[in-house]
Amino acid sequence: MPPDSFSVPAAIIALVLALALVGVLLHHVRVRRDLAQARGQLAQARQEHEHRTRETSATEQRLAHAERQAQESAELLREARAQQELVRAETEHLITKRVPALLSHLRSPHVIVPGVQHQALAGTDVDRQHRALLDAFTRGVREEGERIDEAAQAVIRGAMSRVQTQALRAQDLLAGVQQRYSGDEHTALLREVLGLDMFNELIIRRVQVTGIACGATPGLSRDDTYLVDLMVGAISRVENFEQRIEGPANHLRRRIGVAARAAESILFITAELLANAVHHSYGTLKVTIAVHETNNGAAIVIDDAGVGLNEEQYARATRLLSGTQPARLVDLGNPPHTGWAAIGRQVAHYGLQVTVKKSAFGGVQAVLNIPTALLVEMPEHSRPSVLAPEPVRAAAPAFRPEPVASAPVASFARTEPAAETRQQTGEDLAPLPQRRRQSPPRPASGPRPGAGGSQGPDGKVLTTPEAAQKRWGDFQIGAEAGRREALPTQQHDITEGN
Image (tube, helix red, strand yellow):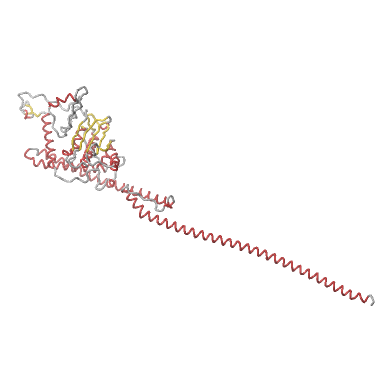
């Protein structure tokens, strides 16, 4: 076969092979393109998957955070509800327990105001707000109470002033009746009048102490007065004083008096201390009173053998008698015991000092210290009243071999000692100003001793000072005896005592 007959099929085969190779190459290229596209899609799908995975993770995290927030919110809500319930219960405790207890505490300091009911609130804002509310409530109640108390005291001062004025006018009228009907033929009438006079005196003292406790003045004025005369006057203001009060014992060695501005206050304080001692000394127990001169003035000492006081009562007495804080009416009890409160006002006003302690007799010893600024030296020409006690005799000198007992304390209603007694004891006393001049001995041709006078130039009998003094003293002693007999038996006044 010719050579050309083999070249055509070979060319065809080569062409076919070339075409096949081209097709394979094209298919390979297409496959690679598809594979690259598939890889790109796969990568995109992976990216989308990763993105979605991240989004899912973020969503899960947000969900978990939301769940935690929901749980925390629920817990906070439960705590808030519990706190609200706690505050509600504490507020109810404040209204139902603490405020009423505070009101009781303001009336009676021994009542304890409870604190917070739940200790979990101690020191919190709720506790501080409740305390601030209680403090504001306390201030408001006290301010309003003080305003009401001051108004009540003003009303009582005005009422007591009017009552005291009328009682003093009644006292002047009774004194006039006593002078007009002082004869022996009017003994029964005079006894009744003296009883009324004593009752009127007690009314004046009660009115005076009530008014002074409310800020009034004593309502009476005096001149410079002997201190022993003020003691006698104070004793006469106490009911049943003759049976219940022993003394006064005068231990003064000079003519000591009290300045006019403080005389009535000293008498008032002494009378109230005596009345309180008598009130708490039951039965026939005696109350003793004495006056002493001290380095800083004078002191009046009152001892009783009564029931005494406990520690709380001593503390209350010290607080009221000091006068540092004026007592309110609501603090004086029901019925109000105004004695110590009234004394405290006078003590603070005049710079006095009143102390109380247990006496040697088991009762109470009250001491009124009067500063020198309130004391005066009485003039030589003046003399105490006939009822004033003589000074207690001085102790015997040291050079005597045997001590001489001092003379007993005389009652304020005793008679004057005899001239012989004064001559016998005159050596035992320190030199003192004479209270009176003794009249010279009457001549033998004078009137009889019982006449009580001397013959004047015109033939009339003149009354000597000694006779007039004795006559007036006898009248005073008889008046006091009649006043005591005229007093009917009655129960103790519940407003007495402090």
